[in-house]
Amino acid sequence: MIDRAAVRVMSTDELTAAEIAVIRQLLRAAFDSDDEPFTEEDWQHTIGGVHFVLDLEGEIVAHASVIDRELEVDGRPLRTGYVEGVATAPDRQGMGLGSRVMRDVTSYIQEHFELGALGTGAHRFYERLGWLTWKGPSSVRTAEGTRRTPDEDGYILVLPTRSSPPLDLAAAITCDWRPGDVW
Image (cartoon, rainbow, N blue to C red; front, side, top):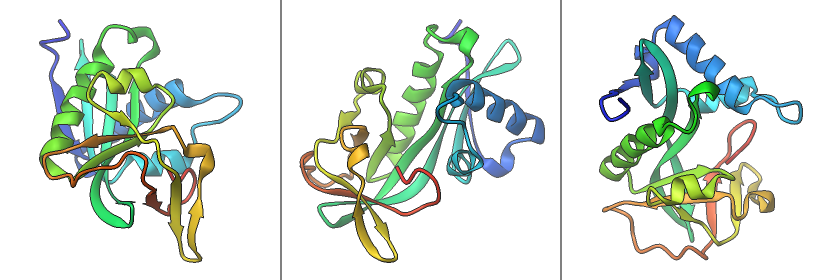
């Protein structure tokens, strides 16, 4: 059944109000906790790019989005497909739905970007799909200059693509600043 499930790919503007409401609820169910709520800034990081939505039995059950960002690796800017909002409905987890969505996301990034990236603590899930843990120091570029983000070290994964330059996974990596979680 999962192999037959189609992943719809669309821009944020193409989502209906009802679809947006369901996706936001899905993300809250996946990420909201007493320690760290799913915020409006988290939602803003998820929109503005391309959404991958998996429907099963007429219901949205899995989602991920790819946002265009510029990461720098050892000072070299790379057009990056940054993955946000990866979630599967809690009652549908463990069925391969998230993997199905991420296979499509991975293919999309490999075709359209110089690099893929995401921040996560779920390394094994992504590594089995070809993602690599970044070993070098992470930072954010701000108006005041580059600022280290040591709490993110070891939590950033990258996906090399055909157009990626040779990557030294121990080199410095930086992201552009944004409100909320920069990575």
